[in-house]
Length: 290
Image (cartoon, rainbow, N blue to C red; front, side):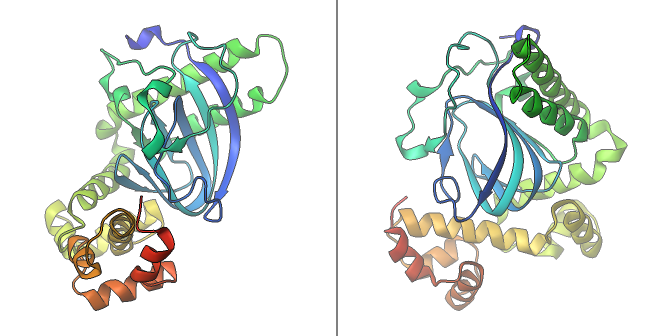
């Protein structure tokens, strides 16, 4: 499919609220049968997309296709959400399609997932940390969706096409934009940590990798994500440990080592501080399964 051929169909557009007490959607690997476009209004936590962890900050925009695995790891979050298809081929399906657990998701459930030949970035998840124009468009979509006016579908499709086009444009030119240097740097740091948190990753290691002063890097990271680089590293390790404790029958000491903790004691102390329970208690409560 070529990008110029898109004629988006808005299935659902809403303002969502979630908290960690919502056990259906939080801390669970899920997939949806149609596409998703989120604009974050407020919140604290992370969204994990295909095993990459991204801090949630106001103004952040997330776009991905049907069948993409994601996890909400949050205290709470408020967001605009649009569930959509890239064409009107399945516009007869108007009911909301709720995401389901990855373990029971089947590719047969996917409504449509076009492969773009000319704009290949749309074939992968896109995360943009500062996109107020896109957020405004998504806000307009949610408002229009709640109304019962003539030609509503045409206007929704036009708004969504504009939003997707803006996301594509920003993604394609982002490295060239002077004002986005900080966001690009933070995105690169996040990618680096996602790939290396199992090793010894200190602020100094990150600073050496990116050739900046560690205090400066940490300040830029905090300004753009709301947390320090060290907090992000620890968060990645705890998330990985939870997954291992749920799904693998290995000793807790081995979990600590595989997730990058310096010792069993450090792991158990940090885990309890972050979750309120010990690793063994977490494994018992979760049934040791994914």
